[in-house]
Image (tube, one colour):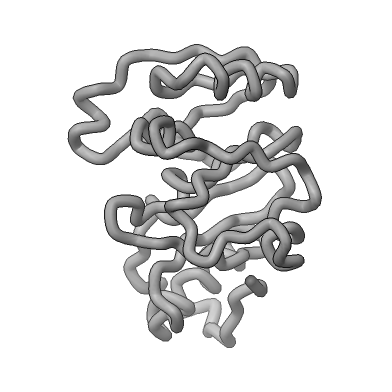
Length: 175
C-alpha cells in the first residue's frame, strides 16, 4: 500500500473514474479501492489527476471484489477516532502486517462481522459526533458509540437491494 503516482500533464483531460472507490478520510487522504493486482495505466492516471485536483495524497486499498467492489463497503473512518473494517471485503487483510496498520494510522480497528458486513455496515455517513447508516447489530452500535459517536440506524433495505448504502447517497463537495 503505497501512494499511487504517475507523471501526468496537468493540462490533459482526466480519464473516466469510478467515484464509488474514492473515500476521503478525516486525515486529509483519499483512499482508493483497487480490485486488480496492477491497476491499468488509465486508472492510475485518473487517480493521479484526482490527487492533484484535490490536493490530497492517495493510497491504494486492495479490495476483494465480488459482492464488495467498492471501498465504502469495506472501510469507514469514524471521524479520526477509529475505523470500521469488514475484513472479507479486503484482499489480504491482516492487522499484523505493518502496511495495514499504517493505512489505519495505528487507530483502533473495529472488525465488522459477516452479518453486519452483508448489511453494508461500513457504508456510513459520519459527520462530527454522529453516524447514520443501516440497521446493524447492537454489539457493533455499542462499539461505535464507545468512540463518542452517536449511531442512528435507518432501514435501507431498498437501497441495499441495489447494492448501495448510506454513504452512496452522499456527494462530498470541496469546502
